[in-house]
Length: 598
Image (cartoon, rainbow, N blue to C red):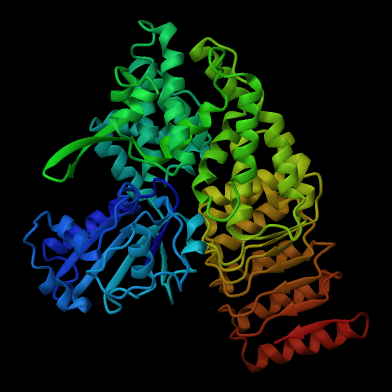
C-alpha cells in the first residue's frame, strides 16, 4: 500500500499512529507479529553494507533479538517504508544484485530495492509513504501498488485543531473567523503542517495587534511570516548578525536539499558557522542516535518543507562578502536546469518557494525585515524557465503540469501567467486527486490567461461543490469543461450554474457524466444552459435522472439551438421519457444534424 500526500500533510504522523495502535492491540490484531518502520532519511546516513537482519536488530534495539524467529514467518511482518521521496540514493536496476537472503550484507539501496521488488521476504507486507512527485518513480519498483491519499484536515478537524492549539476559546474563534473569511488562507489550511504554522503566526499577531494582517494567502507567505515571528524576538539585539546567520542557515539547507541530506552532523553546522548560533535552537531539532555502543547528535530542520523553504531563501538573500553575483546566477541556473530531470523530485518544493519569493510584496517585506536589498537575479530566470516549460512538446499533464501551475500561483505575479498560459490551450489533470488549493491554483492561472478557449480535463479528480467554488474565477476562460466521474452532486451543479450565469461563460463542451446528479438540479441546469449560444455537446451519462427531468431537457433542446450532441445514457427516464426525447430529437434533425445517446 502506498500512502501519498503533499509535504506536511501528515504521512509520517499517520504511520506513527498505525504503529502505536498496533502496539496497543487496537489495529491489525492477529495479522502482524512485528511491525518495523524504516525511515529513508536515516537509511541515507548509512554508508557501510548491512543486511535486512541487521536493520531488524537495530529496530529492536536488542543485539539478542530473535531474528531467526522473526524471519521464520514473513507473512506476519509489516515493513513501513517512510519517506520514499527522501531516499538520497538511486535504486538499483532490477537485474543488479538481486538478493533473497535477509542475512546477506548489501548497500542500503540494495536492501530497499529488494524489499520493494519483493525479492526479500516476498510474503511480507509493505506500507510506503511518499510525496506525489516521487509516486510515479516508485511504480517502477513495486508491483500492483494500491495507492491511497492523505487528504489532510476536514473543516471539522481544522476547527478541533484550532481550539486545541489556542486553548483560549475567544482567541480560537477570532483565528477561525479570520481563516473562514479569508478564502486564500482557508484553502491552504487543510495541510496540518501549514495549519500549525498559520496558528503560530496568528498567535503572535493576536498578542501584539488587535487585528490579524491579511498576509498569508500563499504557502510561501506563511513560511515567510513564520520565519519572521521566530527571528523578531531578538532581532533588535542582533540586527547586524541576523542576516549573516540566517544566510548561513539557508546555505546549510541548500546543501542538504541538493545532496538529499536531511540530517546534519555537528561538523556540518561548524562548516556553515552555525555551531554557536542562536538560530540553531530556533530552526533546528536535535536528535540523538545510537552509533555502536555510544550515541551522537544529529540536527534536522523543523520539517523537511521548512528546509526546502530556507534553501530557496539562499538564492535571494544578498551575500556581498563571499560570493560574486555571477556565482549566485550560475547556481540558480544550474538548479533550474536539473530540477525536473528524473530522480530530482526532491527539488520540486524548493523551486515552488523560489517562485513565491520572487513576489514583489514578499521581497518588499523581506527587505524591511533584514534591512537589505533582496537579490533581483531570480525573477528573470524564473520567467525564462516558465516560458521554456510552457513551450515543451508534448505539453505537460498530470502532476507535472499541476506543479508548474503551483509555481505560477506562488509568485502571485499575473504577468507570469499571462506570458505562458496561452501555451496550455488543453489542460489535462485527469485521474489525479485534487485539493481545493489545487483548484484555486488552476483558477488563478486560467484567470490571468490571454486566451478564452481553454479545454480543461478534470475527469475523476474527486471534485465536489467546494472544488467548483475554488475553480470559479478561471472558468470564464474555458470552452471545454470535462468534469466527468466526479462527486459534484446537485450542490456542485448549482454552484456551476451560478458561475456560468455570472461570468457569461462561452462553454461549448460540458461533461457532467457520473456525478451523482438527480432531478433536483435538472431545472436549474437546463435553464442555465438554455441561454447559451455556444454549447455544442452536453454529457449527462450515468446519473440518476428520471422521467421528471425530461420536460427540462426538452426545453433545453428547443431553446439552445447550438446544441448538437446530448449524452443521456445510464439514467432512469423510463420508456415514456425516452420516447418523448427521441420524438423531439427527430424534429430537430429536420433542421440540423443532431446526435442523441440514450
